[in-house]
Amino acid sequence: MVDNVFAQCNYCKTKIRMRFQMGFFDIPFDFCCPGCGVHIHGLRELENGFSTTVKNASIIECEI
Image (cartoon, rainbow, N blue to C red; front, side, top):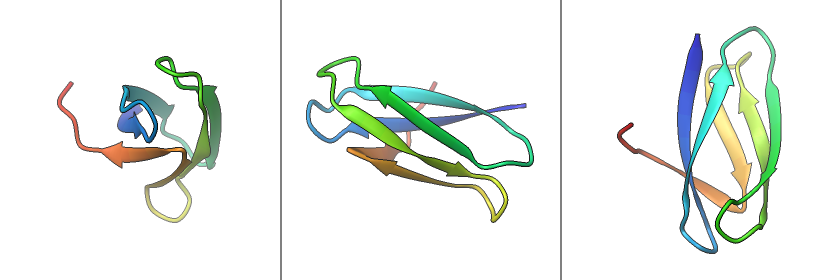
């Protein structure tokens, strides 16, 4: 199963769709914003509930 999480760059406000494979391990992620190139990174925690920590972007609610 794949989970969709949406983020918005804190600098250029580009909306980004992140997709995570659901499993038993936490998932670190690291990529550049497609709009401005800023470094976005964080951790999708699966072991202690489902939470996402992200730097240089904010998690948003968005329709697919």
